[in-house]
Amino acid sequence: MARFPTFAIFYLAALFAWNVYRAATQAFTTDEAYSYKLYIGVEPFNLLHQFDANLHVLHSFATWISVKMLGLTELTFRLPSLAGCALYFWATLKITERTQPIALFLLTVNPLIEDNMSVGRGYGLALAFFAWAFAGAIEEVPRLPRIGLFLALSVACNLTFLFPAAGLIAALMIQHRSALIRELTGPWLVIAVLFMGIPLSRLSPDALYFGAPTVALSLQTLLEHSYGAQHISLEGGVIAGAIFLVACMAAALWAFRKSERFAFLATATFVLTAAAVMASHTVFGMLLPYARTGLYFLFLAPLCMIPLARWKAGVAALAALTVVMASTNHSSYYMEWRFDASSREIAQLIADRRQSSGAVRVAAAPPLESALRIYAQMRGAAWNIERANQWEPGFDFYVFYDDDKSIQTLGLHEIYSNPVSRIRVATP
Image (tube, rainbow, N blue to C red; front, side, top):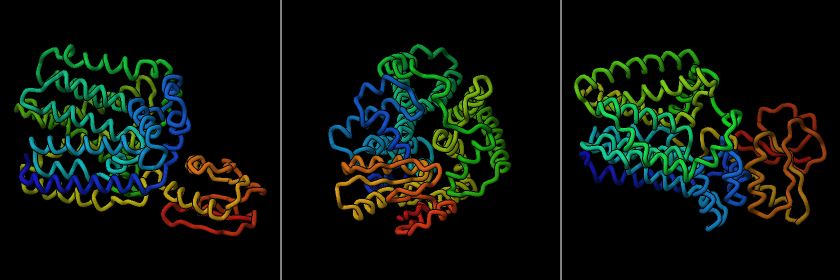
């Protein structure tokens, strides 16, 4: 294995425990609440009746089973993601075995990756299966049917992983200079029929509504969420992305000529994935990755950097990178849903102040109403929670962002403020 197998195991065990803690203690997010409304809180066959960008087929079905068997809590809703976390950490150990020890940290400290190791969405589980496919691809004798199976499961968990799956398959075909399509696509077809066939038959162009309209914005979100920053410029993101892509193309060409299997697979998969994403955007007008929908790039990019660890200067640079990323991790909120961090506290506040069984009217700034509704359902509470596009009198509670000045016209009394989510609650 790596030079420090015992340390690696304890490190990943501690990181997994941290993700379990986050899954159990962090409030439901808007996207989880929306998923519950569409798919998890209804009959399972609703998974087959409509396709929405929120549907992560295999993950959504696993979440439905978890919630139906164990009841609805934050932890039960996120158990499939925690399973993905364990699988992903195991895959990173296997990859580290064949590369450099620094790989273990590069692949596990990115804050956006860590967020998706516990939040109840399909990106983390999809990344776990893709990581297993990549780990299999760098073996001395790749077992192609198994790689195809892992890639198919990855795409079944989240459709965005179709791009890196296609990139890895293309890289394997180039590297082996043979027609691998039969061995790789057999598992694809089986999984596609079982999990994706019927839902995708309901796919319409407007169903894939989440993403970035420009390359600059796409790169900006990936960089900002990787380093916990909020001030990376669009121009800086484009320049950094362009330099990295050119470097990857040069590295892939060099690795191919030198028969460096790992370096070639990592860089070629990154380049081919980026090419597939850009082709879909240019030809079909599909939106580009926005933060979590480009999670695979945050796995592939560090893989491209790992060969730098052959030199001391490279190790120092990669170590500095891991420290920067690790320092931006946190346990009080999910980065993309920071505004939801206080939803559970707010629901408890409403319950404590209204002990009677009578109906309660709550006006919430969008999209804060989604998470509050799932907490109302968990409590069996008769709360009428409305999305407040503009503020009106007549509600018992008002939930709003701390920079919302328009609510001051109602002359409300503030009863709650959260510095993390930056959400406030007021009453008449």
